[in-house]
Length: 236
Image 1 (tube, rainbow, N blue to C red):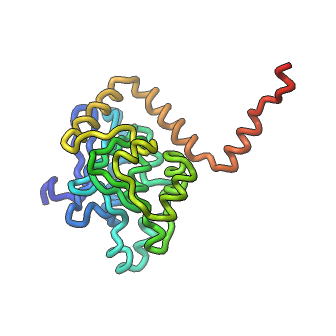
Image 2 (tube, one colour):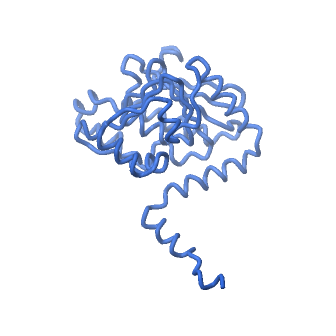
Image 3 (cartoon, rainbow, N blue to C red):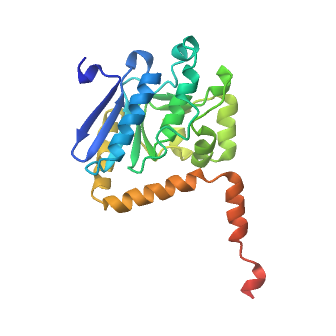
């Protein structure tokens, strides 16, 4: 099997690693083996001081259609292997740029949300269809989607299963920019190369800080707000 035949392709371009989900015939659905390889590869890259940024994308025409339901329903115990977890990419302190080249649905949407930020091609689409299939997210979608677009919009998307196109995703703050499809990877690499020119230790520390903040529960956020409240009387 050649590298191009692999279900996950890793290419190193200078100090940037590009990971490509490569099951186009299954719209890059996440099998147990693909998830295992993705987790191992990200962990390995995160431990590699020569890598300053990671780009995650999918082989056209999709970014990721979600968990491979055929495998999930046909193999006993497959569901336990693919989730739930605290985000499949969440512990990584090397910045991960999600380059969303097409549909990112359900578990694929969760995978995209676990990237540190997203840029999208004009062909990108996002949808949470967990409820349509009778199950709930397990990789942090309910936390990360609300963080990205606001709680009320997140509730609407999860309850209806409706899809966001790239422009609406940008308008709602889910992606930081939208580019022409053929410009997606070059733009992701341009941003990644900018990151590699920063101090590596500072970037890893900052990414770790943002990771920790995103882990704080809603109850904890209320406590922090109360603890930092300034009594108006103290301003007199």
